[in-house]
Amino acid sequence: MQDDDIEAVRWKDVDNLLLRDGNLVGPGFEPGESVKEIVHDMLHVLVIGAGGLGCELLKDLALSGFKKIDVIDMDTIDVSNLNRQFLFRMRDVGKSKAEVAAERVMQRVHGVEVTPHFCRIEDKSPEWYQDFHIIILGLDSLEARSWINGVVCSFLEYNPDGTPMQETIKPMVDGGTEGFKGHARVILPGVTPCFHCTLWLFPPQVNFPLCTLAETPRSAAHCIEWAHLIHWGATRPEEKFDADNPEHMKWVYEQALTRAALFNITGVTLQHTQGVVKNIIPAIPSTNGIVAAACTLEALKMATMCSQQMNNYTMYVGTAGIYTHTVAYEKDPECLVCSAGVPLEVEASATLQQVLDALLVKFGDRLEKPSVSYEGTNLYMRGVLEEETRPNLGRLMTELMGGASSGLCVVNDKKLSGPLRVRVTFRSSMET
Image 1 (spheres, one colour):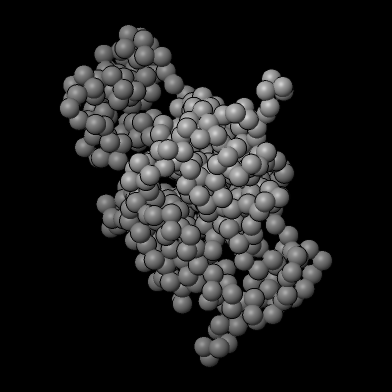
Image 2: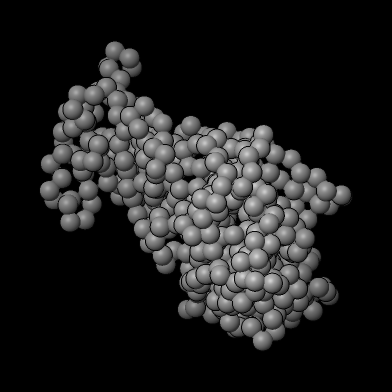
């Protein structure tokens, strides 16, 4: 069989979606070879996470025609990963997940280019993330999701009427699994709820009372958390515990094993220790496969409009049969991360200093030393511009905003992962 024939057969199933019109296509879809070229040659996709879900995502994206993929992950391969992270082999233990996954996908799928990044997501600048057309998350951490959500939403800009500027929207697909349960969701900042809008979807982490850990442990988890939270600080006070350090994890395991023996408690293993300390939920390969397929399909829809987009959150439950349900969650109009402006009402006689004070009161520990700008003009900035903008602190805010009765200010602070948009409105003394 000739190379051209092989190539034609290879993309036969994808061609059924991209080369034909249909009743369920998205707005603006135009079937044809040009659509395939967009996926093959133009789209640059970033996969964050190369674990159980990330391996499936890389495989699915490559087999769906995405040929320019980057993957970022800070972890190395552990023996316990091999039962579900199918791109890895025993000889890969100790190596970078991102690097091995990229190499393995390129070996198996001809023509795809996967660029690995063996580092923390925080090590990359926001400008680096802005270069990608679609970002797909295969993470198991709420903190990491929140951070990248803040970065993506920081690109967002709004028109004066409060509608998002289309060219500033960075599409993101988020997948997550927890045992036999999983979800896939589409995040279009400014259009759909961002991750911060729906934090309430995630259950709070289980915390054990310290008195129970210290005095009356009743389970293996109690012994592990005692070694992690109490005994480490008492025995190694000069060292900061690092959950990704194998020696640190082994020490916690050994101390927990000794304590468990004192109280006749069984069940302390190294794998269980890792699960408790890192709050890891056991992963099921089939759940990873189903969720990754849903995320890849949404990425293909984003790239081509070959079908209508998910609206906007799908959950999967496989504990008793197969159950899926799609929910159209709504944006939080006062979201600190993605909204057109969190409302802040101040007196018409308020100075910039009083507005800064009101910001610190309203947002509590989210801000520490805020800087403020209005329509591209720096009203008050920390650092090298502090001396130049300091005189503005005593000026009326209405004056600084050109006499407007309300307006959108942008607040930056080192505690924020991205800019905070605040819609300032003024009330007269008679209104109070």
